[in-house]
Image (cartoon, rainbow, N blue to C red; front, side):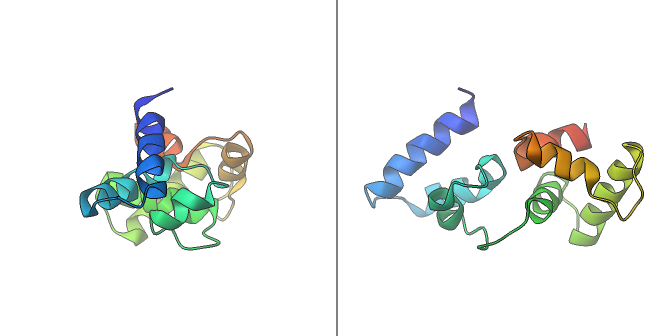
Length: 113
């Protein structure tokens, strides 16, 4: 297991024991991009809006990691789609990444590096 996944499980245990500190909540929010889309327990605790799409989660992660605005993050994702050979309005590469089970955090690292 990698570090973020291990830490998420530690935070899950704290959440279930109902003793999550404010610092741990902030840490959980920072790790939101590493949470699986079907892990509603951690997504809710991290403050990820219910029904957030994969695109929105990746965009938010690009915004957070890249320290940019939402508009800039959208532009980065559009440029990445173009680089993947798709049209600017396409989300084919994002859809493929989601189907492969790539977390928003891992995809963000691929996009920004």
